[in-house]
Image 1 (cartoon, rainbow, N blue to C red):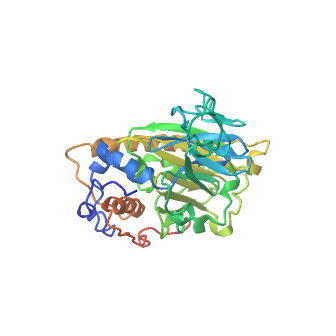
Image 2 (tube, one colour):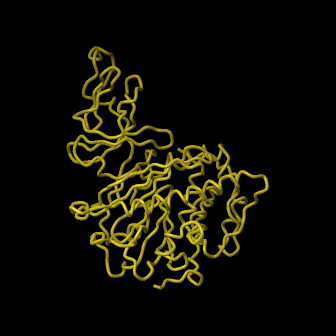
Image 3 (cartoon, rainbow, N blue to C red):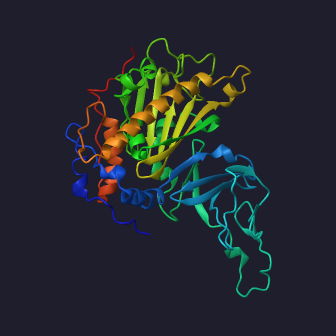
Length: 399
């Protein structure tokens, strides 16, 4: 299936597809126009690989979790063969939604309307009063599957029936984190936020810390905004690392780990660093010395998003009798709310007839890198725009 025609031309993206010291930011319409939002849902979210959560939310046979992608209701369920599969959460009989609870465990899937029953592998196993139907083939009436795959414990789905595999789509990203075992982490807390800002504004904000001294003083004292390095990316992601200031062990209210073990695989080369990666289109992955944090940014409308934040810790840390993640969660909950406020201020300004796309500063080359992922897809001309990070302005060193 071909993608719908883009709401932008390549010429309209040309100013953004310049080197960061020459580029201008994206047109405001990309953030405020309902038609652009609808196009993104169909062209991107309904076709690309989308992270929908942690695979261990459905770890055992019969356990499941629900997701909604591009308006489609989905169920991800673990089969008796331990395979995680995804299906449209729609009965093949009259279209009723099958499962309503966000998570659960069941021996089979049964429609609450007319009791059509499906196995954990999606095959139809019971359809009352269909035995004498002409041409009715139960093997052809199973749940409609959706492509499903996992990486580092994260579950991804793609509504497209065909296309690159998840591994192919992620390109060189797995190599950056292959020494870490993020699949072995466990979610200990989840907070959902409603943000009056476009999903792309949230991702842009995540991609820079130029705002940190004024907006996040508690964060900036642990990881100063101008100390770090950005990665060269060959795939659909942008990111890098920031360096912890002397005397701090992690990102939390007091900056200490209190004996918590490091992430599995955390090496000497990782010490004193905090990784921040924006993974196309809406997964923001923060990998810290002793835990990981994710933000799934779900578009609700042009200028409105839901952000699901989850905190993931090693199993051995969670098992400690003195395990207490509150200093981490409180620290980031404050940081999140500070971010949402400034994102909403940006969204308000983007709606002004006075706004014209501004210039990037040289401390915003990762914002520019994320915007290039957008601009290339809006331009739809087959060209991939890449520029090396501005290492001359973004210095990796420990203070």
